[in-house]
Length: 623
Image (cartoon, rainbow, N blue to C red; front, top):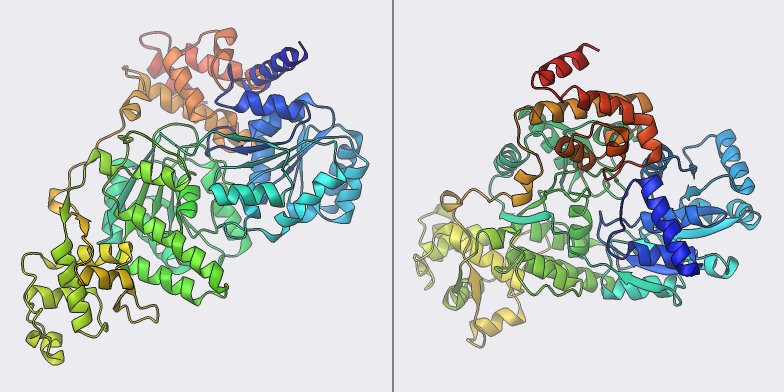
């Protein structure tokens, strides 16, 4: 009976505070366990509602919920959103003045806060631990728990010390959350955070609303511009680049092409970085061009695309970065350009790092797995999920290889020709020159080196230079060739490559679509269904967004904190005419209904009559 009563309380808080009618996935199971005092390890994809798994139990239990969060921006955004819901939340970090920090500490001791967000560095100081020793505690939530993994892409040394919370506060439940953890990382989290008694909740890694697409790199600026203009001309998104210089260049090019684009990297001064991040968070249609310094902790739900202009270093990094798209569950794109030069540069970076041999080997294996993902001819989602130990029986129908199936061919003979010419030229040359030899090109360099006299010269005319470049790229991805990491870009034979050359292995290759044969990509069915049809739908949609923007500016919060796009779409679809009807829409809790309900109802009333749309839009614009 007690369990049923607790479940009833949880559902009531979900409805009245957060404005949702039902839990998703395993949320209710996690919340019930933590609210009852048990530990939990929560592995859910981005956008699946991990934060609710600790925010709601903190409202059900006496005392303050302590959330360990790695970034100030994430703390600030979540606290702003919680306060809009009427939740008593605060941050305790370096952004506060001494007086502000003392006031938050007083509120923690007095037990008048529901949630306090603290960075791990600050949490582990004696001052903060002493504060918590004398305060009523509801729970500890360790967000971004994968930061504990020394093999991971977001490792934070201070996370290793968080295990002491188990011994110091044995009666306080702990919940660790992450969206990114393969089987090995999961074991690390359990051991290093002392979560051996925690219940594991794995929702899965699939993000069905994200469409994955990998494109062979040819002309970066033109390819990016075409993608944005055809798919996301007015949408917010993130473009990732490998270097600071490239982020600046690409942001400038996008501005020249008519987009609102801002750079973000660690070389910018703190004020500029913060200003650019704030514009991305609060304005609509802003593109951030960034290194991986940007993104962890970004809570913006309406990011419609994430584009990689250079390959990341691992599938974990790729999954984490692409996961910043479509957090609201609406259709989004993960679009990546990929070329052999990226592979050479990434391997050079790995070889030149100060990590030990074991760590380098692990990183090399991770990069190889990513290359396999890039070169696959099968469903990308199946490959991605398999890496995390999750099987998907059927192709997804929502990636480029599903929407535009890739042809494969028996490339054994072509592979042997490619490997033969690498060996015959002393493993001293890169792809362009080797392709010229195979196609019998008449270039000064070929004659200068005497390569027109090689037996391989002109023996590959059945393929074009671009097709040979594809063969070499795939052989590198398969591990049959390696790229010289000393900066020369020459190709080197590997033991498996020698096996292919010795006719001991067969090779199957994917056929890259030629540019003139590429078809326009299919749109997700949900993309067109997301916006209702009707003579006034577009006008009402813009009016709703304009009103939301005005209210957000007044409250000094991002627009999505007032209401996310999904809630505005429900208003557009159902056109509620009473507060009661408005309150039944998803994402509208009691506090928001009381604060913003009348303003949105007035706008919706203006669209009730045949001639009302024009009158209402004009009236609102004049106000």
